[in-house]
Image (cartoon, rainbow, N blue to C red; front, top):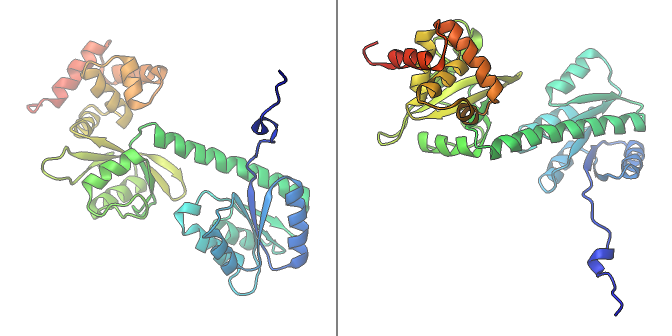
Length: 320
């Protein structure tokens, strides 16, 4: 009996194509860029003005945007600011194209949310190379965000004013229980938390605490917000800790003159966790946990885990 391949086997596999939105009012530029981008295996969307681009993006999210800076009506800078105000488009790279080449024009483009600035006349192959680089960078950033989302980390990012930019699903669940009306984007943290954050960012050495307690219902466990670090010019990474661990970490940090991470490691050591368990709980490598323990032993003047745990328990004792 002769066998024939199924239709599915002989049909070519559909490969997802990157979508490039070109926003320019020049027919010649649009024609040239459309040909070059399509020849490179990408899909092209075209908008002749800023308002049309915004309307188009409501229906289809591109992977990268090529934006003419100078257009009648809403110029490219204004269009980019309008697009970047939508947090769902924050990951989409905007590359400005213009004949303007003064430093202040470049700065204006970057301030408007652009990641790159190409001067006209445009060299197609150079522009395509830049597109590929920014597409790769955007995918890495999105992959990092996705990894955080699925890893169970209780993390969120806020701007310097204390407005939430994004958070992992786990953090959103805790914050939703902690604060009335919480949303994963654009939520403004309570005034005391904003004041703590401003103090922490202004002078880390003079800050009174690396963490702060959030108000929750009487029956719920307390929730603490800890500073992790600044990951952008206006993006600060914070970590949530549920239960008494947050307050105990702060006690160890303050009384024993430890860093935030050292206090976290010591707390779990005092609770009888092995190094590998501590590494898993805090999302560290076992080698990093060992390094932290070396610093802890040195600061506490002890030689082993048992002695360090005893110091921690004394520090946490209500009588201490």
